Image (tube, rainbow, N blue to C red; front, side, top):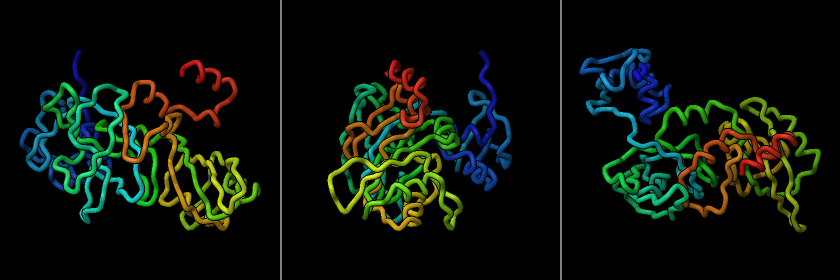
Amino acid sequence: MKTKHFRLNHFLSSCGVCSRRKADEIIKSGKVTVNNKRSLDPAMKIHPEEDQVKLDGKGIHPPQQKYYIAFNKPKKVITSMNDPKNRPCIADYFIPVGFESSRFKGLATKRKKPKSYGKIIPNGYKKAKDRIFPIGRLDWHSEGLILLTNDGDFSRKVLQKKIPKTYLLKLDGRPTTAQLLKLKKGVYTEVGRLKAVYIKELKQQASQHSWVKVMLTEGRNRQLHRMFEKIGFQIKVLRRIGIGRLKLRSLKPGEYFLLSPMDIKKVFSLPSELQSKKSRKISKRER
């Protein structure tokens, strides 16, 4: 079977170098060569097995093995694989390790200066060093579930689809039902209209604080903070606990696991709260 041709920007993205949009910028800057000739055209068609693509003189190749990882990001950690200011970042939690199975849980091992940023050497592939990167982001003070991969196509699919993401919030007060309903209908902020697709105050003992479960299909900068500020509340704790139907489970901050094929399917499935009764029955049979 013949290997299909790829656009140059698509090839860089699928190799995990960067996003397709960023690939356009890199190519137009003249940093990419194809068969030792500089290419400035992101739409140029290349054949992965026949053409030699280089970035800054270094060869670009498809990942030897693709990884799909669920990670529980701790607070005060940058959602990046490096940081010019030397702040703690996600890469600090991924050192060369042997993944014994798809259900392996890796306890975070913090190092001040990791020797290998974003490199994973899986069991049986000691020479494989595939670059991984986070899909999307969580703010410095936020915590919870974030996906990482070295598969550019998977990353783009997750970012382009409006996948519901579930958050657990601790507020500095107790909002009324009417105030929460207002957020579901949508509020206008300096960045436009923002809304939740699901929102519910969780049952709790008498307290001056409130825990609220919220689902969003957008990921604008500080979206939840902007929304709750509009109804007069500050968020004290922001924790993402689900992406699609994939849940954070019992992962502690800094722990991670490899996604199984069923886990990947859950990423693109609706949470039970947004499903019809018929869909819920089907989902239960799949578990």
